[in-house]
Length: 264
Image (cartoon, rainbow, N blue to C red):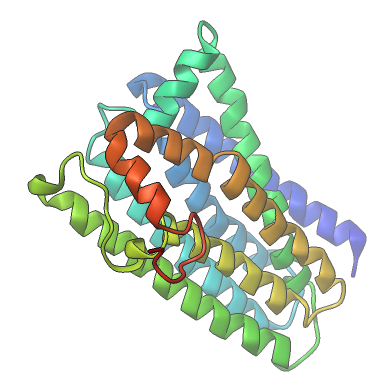
């Protein structure tokens, strides 16, 4: 692997993501809604994929395959989040309202650095893509096929979970209730689980390239963030504030993360 080329690619991608997040922060500051950061975080991965497709020296077919995967997944998630956020743009999501309170009176300045930290996380999480796209070897190997099929399964089920939740929320009769339909019957966060599984698939795909073991950083970071930081803890705290006892009962009967058998 050409270390200089990798670092140059990383800097180009970082600059692009930071500029996008700076523009996103300006918009968020204007409308007083930091929720938009989630949408742009997702869209940054397709941006990275396009830059790497154009600039990285790897085998063209492999570049098409992995960049196509990243673009499809990032655009799907970003658009799903965008629809939700834009549908109530005048109302900041509960998680960010809470951060705004905690960071007062310097919330806007802190949000700027928060947005930039998201840009940095985009590039760090893209490590498997850098590894894969620097590989000049011709031919798709077993690790790459396994990674592709696991990616297809994880993205399909994440989309299913998102669709089930969106349809549940559309029904006015479900206002204040907890979604326990479909995949949500077995797990409180099936969308997060399959999002993590998608990053596992990128790691497996990367194992077919030199230095592919470096790709483990992505699913490891994602798992930590989902379980301990911005994923499940923040989401469940907000659900407890908004749904109270109904969500407490749901917590007792379901798996927190992995879709599994329903608890008795």
